[in-house]
Length: 245
Image (cartoon, rainbow, N blue to C red; front, side, top):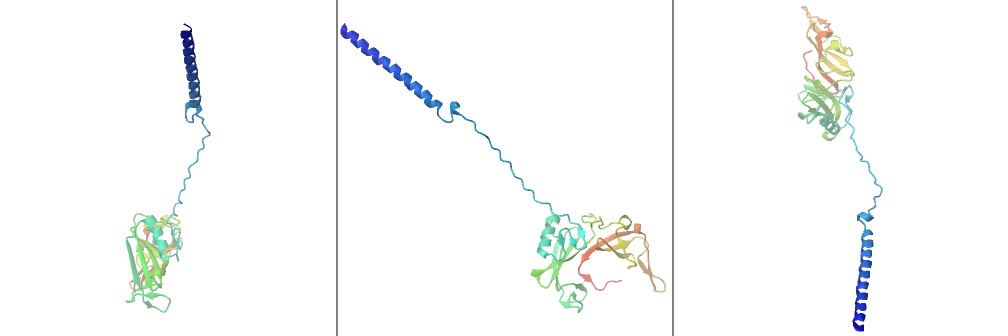
């Protein structure tokens, strides 16, 4: 009996020691789990930093206002490539791009085509035109060094381009007092200026100039309401040397 009691006491101690060990392991496990980063018990919310996005906006190109010394930001004398690229960006691809030779010097600082019919300021020329009938003229001694010499604008009912005072193709003289008309002309066609730009004017009424029965030239005085702008130009452009008037 004494042996049985000793065994029972020994068994009781073993079981009791196992329970104590299990409790210790459970506590350690709980402590370990609560310390693991990323668990709910150990989650810490730090300060949030917001970085503002930076937006860069390219500057809009300068409007293509017709000027006596160029168009928009492009001044006469600028390199051909600069002007053509800039105008193409706003007007679209050119409708035509044609070179011309003026091999004959006229002795007055100008040059003419081989047939002598057309004159220009340089021995080499280039005419680049866009669909609204605006043409930029370039000239120089060599193809790689052509510069912007002038422009012409005509036959455009869209009025896509205007001078600083709003004058464009089709503008009526009576609506644009800024226009100065020259005295006289070639029958229904006259000339004038506005904002430093040369104009060709057309009268639907009294002619700018005519001849009487005796062959004398008579200067006309058409009414401003009868006169419209049909051509605008500036700078040096090719010119036909044998006009009627």
